[in-house]
Length: 197
Image (cartoon, rainbow, N blue to C red; front, top):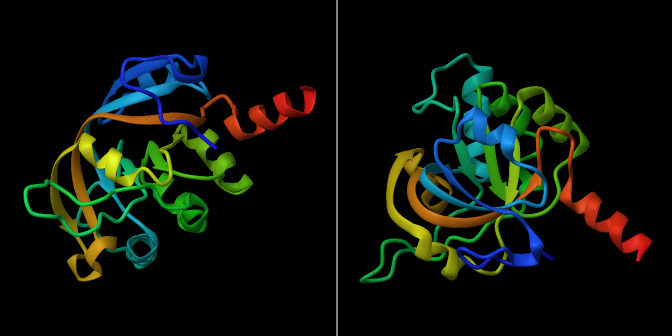
C-alpha cells in the first residue's frame, strides 16, 4: 500500500520533488524509485477503452487526434462533475489493464504514466528502452486527488464518456515513482526490505 504524500513533506522518508509537465528528459533522469513527486502542468487521461482505440488507430496507420510524444498519461476516468466543482472524483485505475497497449504508446514517445499497481515485465523492459517512468497515485483517494485538478477539457473519443481522453491541468498532483529509467522498482524494493526485516 502506498501512502499519499503530504504536500511539501517527505512522506515515508522519500525525496519530494516538484516536477513540471510535460516532463523533461532532465527530470526523468533525476527521478529514482521511491521519490515522492508533486506534478504541475498538463497531462492526458486514458483508460482501457481509449487505449484500445489508440492502438487500433496506430495499427491502421492513422493519425492520432493528439500527440503522445513527451506526454504523461494518467489512468483515470473522472466521474461526473458536481455543481461548483471542476471535476468529479479522479482516482487511478489498475495499470496492468493497460499493459497490452502500453508498448505501442511508448513507441510514440509517451514518457510518463500514472496509475496503481505493478506493471508487467514486458512493459518494464519497454520503459527502460524508451526512457520512460511509471508513477503511482493513491487508490481510493480520487476525491482528494481531484483537488489538484484545476481544469479539464475533452481531447478525443467523446463517445467513451468517462473513458474518453481528457486533458487535465494540475497543480501539485501527488504521486510516487514506482519504476525509474535505471531499472528500479519500488514494489520489488519494498518486498526485499520486508524479507530482510
